[in-house]
Length: 224
Figure (cartoon, rainbow, N blue to C red):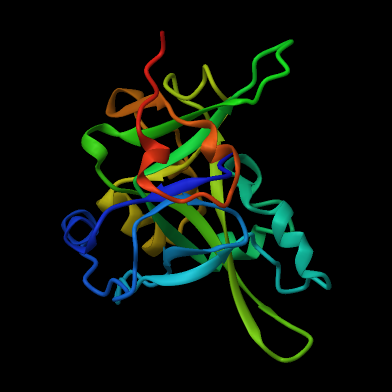
């Protein structure tokens, strides 16, 4: 799964990897992005404009928006069948910008907190999560854009900590995800990112809570 991630890079770094020039002027580095928060997504491969979209997909037919907290992730294997994701997979795909995500190791028999790890591309390069988005109409008439991050089986780097990982894409792959139309071609993209292009390390348990957000949260913990 993917329940927390980071985007610490500035506009020039995003432009170099993705060709994005329209970065919001008030954008600040984020070290602990959590569900229900607005997250940086792109839905149009032509404009490449970053939009802040709420994390936790609310299907257009939903009566209760609280369903979004249960739909922060979508399994790649069942996108085309699940009612919550089927239409969005056909028509409303997005990319979600990041340069790292967290997963937690649970220690059997331990009463202590789960141990957080951060997973990144080598050299801290940015990437995009494959995502889906929807528009939901609130009873008061307001429209709300929401999204979910697609997950797949974990690669060799992530698997010791968790059996699932987000689908990660580099710049060229990301724009293909938005522009392709063939179900077969799209499903072929939903694969684990190459393990030899990733790194991971243990970080502070501060990230076990969703409210802290500062650079110390992604500093490596030295294991004795």
